[in-house]
Image (cartoon, rainbow, N blue to C red):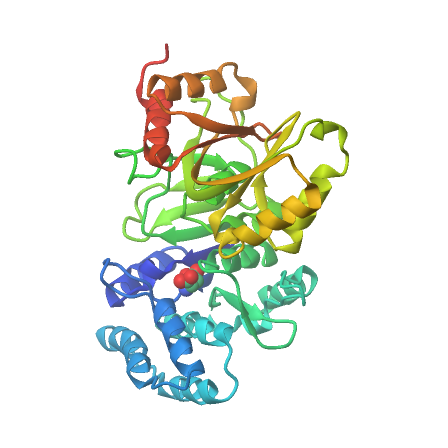
Length: 441
Ligand code: ASP
């Protein structure tokens, strides 16, 4: 049996966290491939090394003094080395980084050093071999992972090596230079490695015991989800429940390898198990969890007999494509189309997009409004049960929450509702309570 264990930044933030990780890893010889993040934070006032590295890069590209920030970064690693009384010396590594800051500077390279250095430290501390993902994880020119090359490299590696630490978050770009995933991307590395070495389990160790059925900042003590399917997890992760990178599900899905979310600070507790399929149990609630995201805008286009104009939607989508804007949902009626778009896409582009839509689509009316939040209700069991939407809508109506938009995905594992931003938290709270805390009517 082979386990790939990924440890997040808070699990490796300092020496005492390193000790917990060592205990966990060595307590099961099947934990053969270990994927560390860069040191993160345990307390709110601490800095994540990756954030310090972003600052380091910003200073370096402007030719400003990097000494102080470099020292802060060095100190983070040095404190771990000293507290654990390790014999490893990272000064050579830091010299190389400093040299590269002056010559071959890319943001991805600088960012990746957090995981690289932590991997070196952890490998030394565990007595495991260190392997650089530059030789294991490859990207294509379009930025996607080169599956063929990557999985061949991992397969070959696994045949020769066991007990290996492989830093998360980066790999080798098509140009041969370091390329990182998006933030939180060590989760993806762990998943790719689990798939590449044909692991039986991908453990993702973090600072909470599992995936909660709602955001604990909104719902008081939501219950933990013990079992969840990959698609449900992806929906919830995408919709704001942030424990696992939303992309991390894909690689393991191919091989049906389960993911288990575990808590480094409470390894005795059972975590959340993420698997391909779970049989419907009528005793289980119809929904699995609720999550949400804020900061959306709606662009509304009205045109009489729009539904008879085959080119209308295409033209509107062309404008969005030309502006690199991704409309998340497109609810429609016979004479109108609405595009729900994350504000992050619209920054500095609102006026231009409106003007181009006016010119290209010639609508009778066009309007844009912001302050929309999306609340997603996820549940694999929804499709087999009657009355779920009715319960959601009645609950919202009873609480005087106005629904601005409704989308149900064809897979019927989610219902998404658009509400005003001020209703973002109340909507999630009342829906959670309706399904999990109140006696069914
Ligand atoms: N260290 C990176 C970040 O903070 C990647 C990761 O932790 O997964 O985003």
